[in-house]
Structure formats: structure tokens, C-alpha cells
Image 1: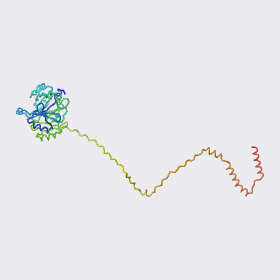
Image 2: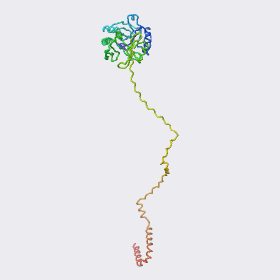
Image 3: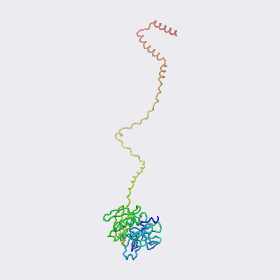
Image 4: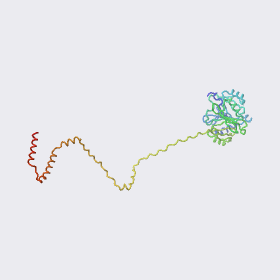
Length: 370
């Protein structure tokens, strides 16, 4: 990441307080931060979670406390050139409260205030790549909010100094308009009219990203803080809570909306248990009265089929009929003659001899002709 790319981004948050030990114990319970002394300045304490550090803490100087300064959180906004940005802020009606100064091995910074009186710092890191994460993991900062006496005038100042864009204006009724700002379409914070009952001057309020705003609010109360707003839902999803720490510094926590739970995929019905075959045979059904009375028919053996007689051809039958011997005919004629003989004898009739001789003669002629 080039140094110029952090211009206008919130890169760090810093607590100025008179009780650093009490603040360390309080925020570790509310946000979950652990603390570590800075390598560059052991008197400076860093707040972090996991492997990242997102905020710091330093003891408020005695002269500042004597002058009436109160514990507060201070946002650091990245710039490409500290002196050039400070000069531009003055031209736009802002003030330089602390001129540019170096933090060894860390970077260069200056403390300014906008025309309405809200305090902020500008910062240029020594090493490229330093800055706030693009997303908001737990322990980092999800939102920055400016409470001011004139949010449109304040936005005009910051938009010219850092190139911020007005992304949305929300009507809040009696509280006026809530202006959401950012850059390249990415939201970075909001501005609204200050509540005079909570503060006599404009201020910047950081929102730490936590798992549960409700749990952080309860922890703040238990650790000696005081709830100011919430916990409550906010437009766009999520919940917030605003509170003061034991020293009076105002702080806020934000928890993102939980994604809607996906409906559980229906579980497949359990497979039926495999039935093991048993050796016991099922009992036979009880016979009905009709079954009991009727005897069982004897099993019939299949009848042996006789080979079909071969049919003789018609031509062969006729030929066989023609070849029958004439003996049968002769026998039938002899039988007929024999049947007639007794009748003839009874009647006493006999053929005359002449007729028998004539018949024999005719038969002889016939044989001779042949």
C-alpha cells in the first residue's frame, strides 16, 4: 500500500487519560483487548487483539489536566504530507493545536481541530502499509462518528481536506440529519448534531467491533463505566452501545448483525435394519372346513401318448383295393349258390339238360375263339 493511499482513512485511535492502569483493566474487560508497551516509548501503551494492534493510550500531561482537559479518545487520519495538510486545515478554518512532530521509527503527526472545535490528529507512517484494516475484525474499529454543532459545515471542511464524499443523508426527526460519509463508495463514518446535555463541545466517537454490544455494555457497567445510549439496533443491521469509562471518556461498541441461519438440510430417513433369515418356517394356515372335508385328489400320472398311426396315401389304398384277390368274390357266389340249392331242391326244380348242354356249348365256343 502506497503512503498516499491512506489519505483520509482512519488509521489509529488514542486515549488520553489520567488513569492508564484503570483504563487498561476496563477496556480489556469490555472489548477484550490485551495491552503491550510500545517499543518506541515504553510509557505509551498499545491495545490489541490477536496479532493486531488498533489503539494506544498515553497519560494526559498535568498541565493539560490543570487547564481543564478531560479524558477523551482522539482519531488519527492518514495523510501523505503532515505539514501540507495542517496548512490546508488552517486555510479551511481549522486550527493547529500541536505542530508536526516525529515519533521515532513510527511516523510523523500533528493535532488539529475543525472549525466547530472537534479535535483530531493527522498522521503519516514511516513504513508503507501501516493503517487500518479494510475490514473490521474483532478489536478493531467499525465506525467513527462526529457529534458537532453543524454537520453540513463540518462535512464541507473534511471533504475538502480529505476528499470525503457524502454517501447518504438520513432524517432523524428532532435530532436532525445523520450524514454518512466515505470515499470510493465505502462508508467510513457519520456526522450529526451534538447533544448539548452530553458534551459542551463537538467530539469524535470511535466504535470498537465486538461480538456482542449487549455483553460489552453489561461488562462496562460491571467494570465501573456508565451506559449513555443503548444497547439498541441501528439502521443497516447490528447493535450499538455508548458508555463512559471510569475516568469519563466516552466510548462505543458495535456488533454486526448475525447472518440468517440457513435451514438445516433434511436428514434422509434411517435405513430399515436388515432382517436376518431365520430357520423357523412359518406355520401353515389352518384349513377351512371345506378344505378339511374334501379329500385331496390323487396325483395323476401323465398318460403315455401312443404314436399316431401313419396314414396311408389315398392312391396306395385304391391300388391295394384293386389288387384284392377274386377268391372272396368267388366264395361269396359259392355261398349264395349254396343258400339257393336247398330251396331249389325243395321246390323240385332243376334246369333242363338241354339248357345245361347249350350253356356248356357256348362256353366251349368262346374258349375256341380265344
